[in-house]
Length: 423
Image (cartoon, rainbow, N blue to C red):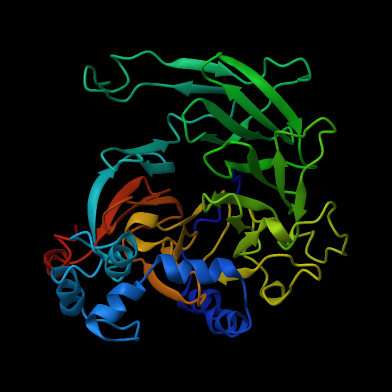
């Protein structure tokens, strides 16, 4: 389920925090034997480029900012500016770890928060506004001709997802995503289903009985909109191909999580995605490894419920016997609520990092290739950080918490001077 019902608000002790983060060395050891072209492509996309290496006469990955700027001055990319790879290599060095700066504070829990695609807007949703219902509201938050002030000057359009012939009772929506072209919405619900809504035709076009428990998270795989990823409290991630749904069967199933999935983020290439799980782990998946059915196994952790208690210490070393994931990232805490995880932006990092909120009031950042936790943003929030968002272009991250606070983390002023002119 996606909502908490207990009073488990006490802070983590230092001992518990160390236990959660202490598995990073194990993750690193596991990564030594990991071979997948997704990791290779991540290294290529996050630089430095071969042309830059040759122009400054080095084969090392450790290149100073001065030498990078010198390479640009001698036009190593051939177009008078940094290539996208070299830009990501330079900007990816500067993690948004300084601060935080207070953005806002509300009297209710923050549940979602995201930058717009162009980075010009930041939107946060709080408990006073959100509700668990089959209706999604769309509101125009601002255009060149018109702005919405306190949701007064614009009209909320209610999209009713229960208007389908197969729906027999009311339900709540846990996750909703736009397609890349903005023409469709995909949603996951607590009636174990996936829904697709056509915004142009203004009607529901698909209801898919997808899992055997709540569908906590959904995402389009890429800009084509053909593939949909879903994650559920049945512990499974599934891949759906909308071009062949006549049998209402998934294109494939991916097993590996020991408990329910709380969030999915697609890499955008139609092949790779990550999922956050109640087993206190993020997993990376390559859909080329998926199978047609889920492998059965004896669940020894079925009595534990993430809403009411800490993750038992004896469970932390358990591994699914048929784990199909290509990497696992540990060190954060997933309790009480559907905590979200993401790839870092392609523009500024080449998607070389994964970041996530955490129940222990922190944001954790992991290196995709090594599996190491490279940063942990903490010390300001007092309750769980359910969502956070990395600016699409700048080394800036905004966190939102159940304490009602919204905070901005950024690079230091000296780093700003070094990276202020990268084009």
